[in-house]
Image (cartoon, rainbow, N blue to C red; front, side):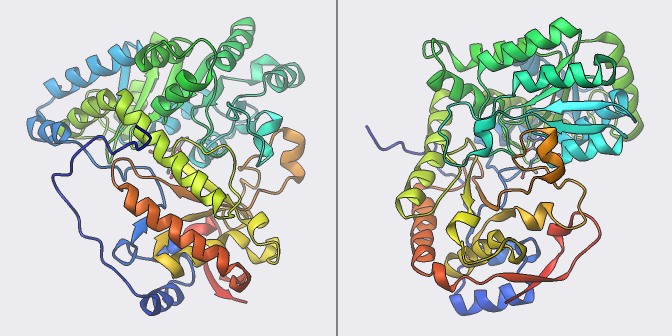
Length: 465
Ligand code: F0G
């Protein structure tokens, strides 16, 4: 069958409040043309993020009721067993979300003078690296910056650049090498097992630990199974296990492939590191058996990590994102190709060449999609990375040289919450995008009239030019 149906039935529903174009015009104006400042109630299809926005299963809700809230509770040990079985890691620290794991990790290994290479740091990862005093360096492959290059593993790390970097700065300045699977800042693109093995080889040669930022590990494994030579007969679990076997540690936000609304993990192999990380966890998050979460959250996570590796779920998940990408392209909207695992990224500069970069073409597209269909997306371009923000190189900059001069691509991310929307919601998004193509010439640039000093995209205000 060509139609891939949602592999679940719906037991509990949340109403969507419909709005008219006239209402949306006012909502948009009142929010200063910044969709972070619009209430979810005023959004029809919310594609702002795939993080913490997924729907839990009946088994996860059952786990919420089973949650044991006593100290050193059974829920932790069930959770630990599930994660150990999936990843092969014996040492599992729960945290409240991904960035808490990052904060602990880089407090331990970061610091002034240190350099952390990654295929592409996510912004919180970069922020935590930099907060420790260290520098974050992105080392993507050259294809990653070509929006239409159809490399099957565009998230790969540039192994040559990694070796050059180690030679340039010296191994003692690099506390660890990190690989983000899938690469969120680079379009949700996967990393191949072959690439992970090659990175591991370099790490082993230099005695460097390899850490994964494994928020979307299951989506990455699905791409490996279906795109990498010799992988089609292996199970997702086997592939997941090999990815983690190559790593010495991992930070994970369970708000993505953990299929929960809150939660994170820090995985380590080294006993000494475990001891030090546990102390930091206890300092700000909580004891090692709950890490800032409730027992019920651990139950929901344990079950989420089980469900996310199911073939039917992943086939539906990856296909729904791909379907949106294919239809947008057919409608005449340029996207980062090929479609990513969790999101489609519209190339706004290419879509609206009449809007100069300093008038934020991405934000113009975000506003256009909201006006037409009440769809919430997010600009990932000059609004997010321009201005006084430090991370001006965060999106798709391949190498340290470009980091000094490079400008970000002007992207609009449509991120797909997990198990929340059906195909008709996505068809509605596609129809709205078709309308956007017809009205492309009407899209107007924006002027920023309020710019906060840090992370300006969250609270900036604009007016239309
Ligand atoms: N690493 C990656 C690759 C991420 O995408 C995120 C979050 C994090 C780390 C941090 O995890 O939010 O649990 O602290 N990404 C979300 C997004 C926010 O919308 O892409 P967190």
